[in-house]
Image 1 (cartoon, rainbow, N blue to C red):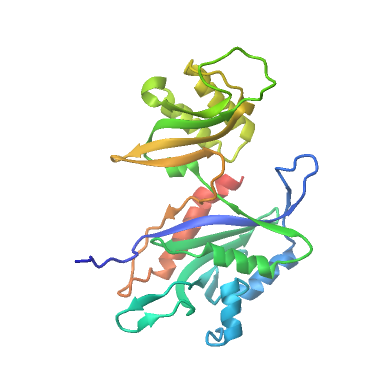
Image 2: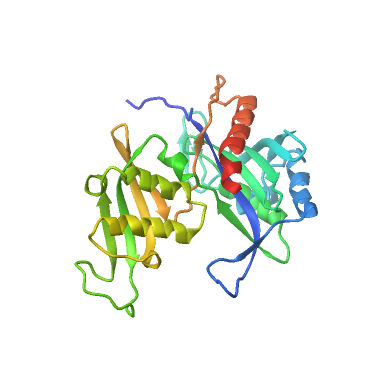
Length: 311
């Protein structure tokens, strides 16, 4: 028999929107710039307009599905520049069956309530926090809507904020998996390993300082990439198995063990998943989290976790 469950875990993730332009000197790192006060005011005007959308109008439905509009509700100004409120995330595209309503068409628009926290930083970036209820969330819909509102003669990118120290938490790093590639033109003696590949370094092989070294990388995840690579190269070289320079390293993950389970943390390389911070909130009889508690918890995470990452 299937067990009755609820999505009674609420988390929050944070992201920011920024203008980007091509960097001729460093194509892999575009030039970032913030939005003007007037441009941010467009966002404020939309999230404070609580006029209900006509969700039976086909044009409105198409705008929601396209990400150019969302239903917003219950806006609150926490302080002079910090906005909190509710928005409905859209789910569609797959048919399912409800015991009371029958077959729900794949074309129908199903809306779930989530909460947001939005502010403009001193450098003009727009910081956005959104909630997730269990596995459900819709930052994609929120970001598309805000990027549509902010559109202009410039590119807009969404950046994801990650806290590796937060992701490691009370876990213990037990292994590093590192991807490397050494240039062909670099003169060196032959090694056991080839010029490219993946190697694994375990804490049992490295020594007592392994967790501290991994923690040092995690603490600098938003810092200088070259410095992170240098720390990783030092860890590898201390293992006396392979000699690497920092420019040889192209990716790295850490395997962390906590309470008998393991998970993977990305120390370097491609990973667009935001860190999700658990919110301590209670629920009503319908499984809806208390809104005032969600607000207070999101503000707490912003001040304790996110602001230090942005500085």
